[in-house]
Length: 173
Ligand SMILES: [Zn+2]
Image (cartoon, rainbow, N blue to C red; front, side, top):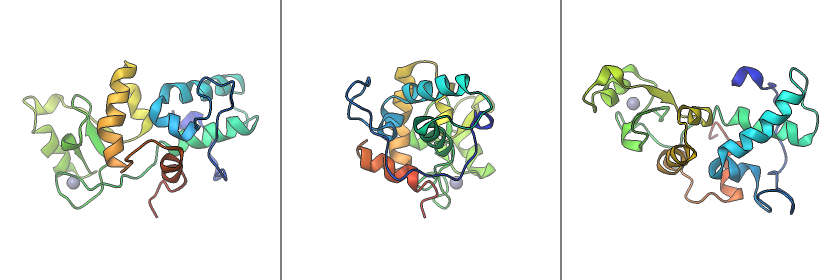
């Protein structure tokens, strides 16, 4: 998905609030990344398809490009539950909970796989919004967000402000 997005260093000044006639009036796109990721992705996809290969055509398109790009590189705020040294970066597809997450280290990844009866068949995926597409049902994607993303990125409630802070500071600096 990354390759389809227009790379840029542009960062918006404020969250994108939806107007009164939108499907989610008064909510921000930042908040909806957590509350309905496929909706935000769909808004981006419509524009991407229409303007394929070109620079973003309007402010919304540019904002969506930024949001989805950033969603692929937000650094975790939690430490790896296996080594307690490095930051969480991966999780098990078949059991997307904090206890089955780990950092980039091979030893920690092996440790997670060994939690299961068939370690060799366990897939670990990166902690990004794009990883949600590994799950076909909306209910499953929302479960990953609520059970894992919320914890990993230390968001207690999906308010516009909390979500916005995460997107404007993806490296946690
Ligand atoms: Zn680790």
